[in-house]
Structure formats: structure tokens, C-alpha cells
Image 1: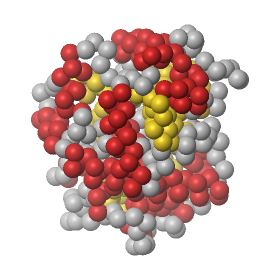
Image 2: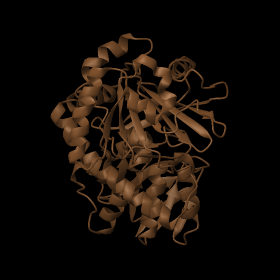
Image 3: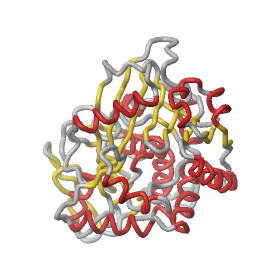
Image 4: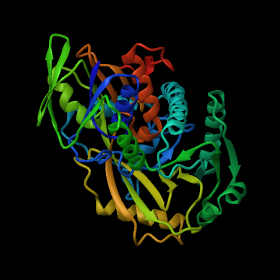
Length: 415
């Protein structure tokens, strides 16, 4: 089967790779000259397999009014005259019910564990250098009340197979001394020893090079897709700036840009771009001013991950930002908050970045056949968990397209 995969971020490249390894003839198309130049470029770097609770949770809605009124809020909302924005926000609010969030967490956990296992098998076959470390993860809490709530989540996730421990402040500092800068503000942490980290762009580029070497793969970069040509219930060609690509099937993995391709066909997807920011901080060998373990500052919603000689710091959600331009005020605020937690950390050479995370209201990606055509497949909406869920999403999609036994239940992720 000839499959055109649209989008060369981490989701598109992993999809193309697994489809090609399954024996399909693959054409990978992207408007950029290089892979992983958009949402996959400088994201948080955490491979957070055991902590995949969706953004839509029971504690979010009560916090929103306070966040919107604070200048230092991790969430910023720009209302727009856009029905899609308001529909997405309404569906997000409905997904914040405890029962929905608990179900979504269990479903995402199954996909994340699949992704972990698939990645490990992939790296055994295709060694790729991307600063991959198995250094564990700490979710640090400032509030004792929130730490107690986290204890209940840990108990629930243990039923799903997660191995986590709740630590008090002294136990947390013994494990990660760099958190001493939080002082009396540190109540404790949730520790997950099995978590990993790595550079998403380097991983995507490394797999992209392996993909290009396969004999049944054609790569067309710097080639924007203009539209999908449909006859009856089938997509028959992908129209690009460089000509038509005749296809047996199409995989849409172009993030939020996928809406522009599916809407002319009479369909839509519940995706909205959630803008996030990151800093890449050069670190000298043996520098102990930043954490060695991956850390999430829960109240600030800031994540820290060591990736080779870089400390990646990612944070914030801007809803309604029209593009991925870097907002200097948000970067300034991020630096201020980082310095409060790690006062010895030198941010003078930090490289800022902003990207749009393609998110669904429930936090669950869309993986499966689209309703608008029998041979149009989606792999979209991984949001902030794109790197974590990429390999599992690609494996699940490949099994569906190839008629293979499904590695997990695909029902929760069907478009």
C-alpha cells in the first residue's frame, strides 16, 4: 500500500518509520526543509510515561479565575471571535469532571506504557543519539494540601502499574539537592524512578535519517500540501506545491495544521493550539546548580530536564495566541520564576523558544480512520505528551492500517 504521511514532526516521522518497516511504500511530506522544526523542536524533553494525567482535571476549573487575574499565571487566555476556540473550551470544561479525567488517565497510561516499550525495542534495533537518560522524575509540591491530593493520584496510578513514591521535603532534598533553593516552600514530591528524558528534535532527526535509508521510502521536504483530492469515499491524491502524489492511503500528522486539510472535505478535528515556551540552558560538566533528575514544579507548571549538556526548561499555556512568536514578557517571567527556584543557575545564555502544542479537550490523541474518507487516517492531538506518546501512537496506527492485532484497545483514541 502506498501511504502519504503529512507532517515531519515526531508523530509524523515515527508513523512513517513504522509503516515503512511494516512493508508499506511511504511518502513523507512536509513544508519545512528539516524535520521537527515546529512543535517537536525544543519541547520539555521529559518522557513521562507514568504521569500522563490530562490537563483537564477536577482541580483545574476552580484555579482558572485566579490564574487569569495573576500576572505570573502559568495559564493565559486570549479570547477570540472564533467559534472553534469557544467550542474547544466548553468541551475542555466538560472534560474536567473527575470521572472523565480518571478514565482519560487510565487510557493515556495504556498508550504511554506501549510507547515506552516500543521506544525501547526501537532503540535496540536503531541506536539513536538524543541525550537519552533514565534519570527518574520528581514532581515537586509547594502546598501540603496539593501533596496530599497527589498521594491519592499515586494510589490510583499504582493500580494502573505505575511505581511511584511520595516523599517529604527532607527525602526530596536527599534525592535532589538542587531543590534546596525552594527552601521552606518545598512540601515534598512524587518520585517516579522509571521516567526518562531526551531531546525530541534529535530523536526525530535521527529516526528521519534511518527512514530515508529505507528502500521503500520517499521524502519530500520543503513541499507544502495544498489539498487532499477525494473521489467518492477515497482520497486519490495529495496535491502539493511540487505536484500530485497518488496514494492508497493518507496519514494526517501535521498537528494543528491538519484542520486546514480536513475542513474542505466536510470534516473537522477538536484540536486547538496551546502555546508553550522553553529555555535551553547550556550546562558545564558536573554543574550541580540545576537538577540531575527531571523535575516538575507543580504549582508553577514548569518542567526541567537534563538533556546532554543542556538543561531544558518548559512552561506555560497560552490559549488563543495566533502564532508561535516568542513573547518577551513570558520569557522574562519564566526566567524570574526559574531563578526563584534555582538562584545559582546562570540563564544568561539561555535560548528561548515557543511552540504550539496541538491539543484535544480531553488530552487524548486521535489515532485511527477519519470519518470523511475511508483511507484517511489521523495521528493527532498528543499535546504536551507528543514525545512521550509518539512511538505508541505510531505503533497503534500501523497495526490498524495493516490489519494486525492491536497492541492496546484503540477505541478511546478513534476519531
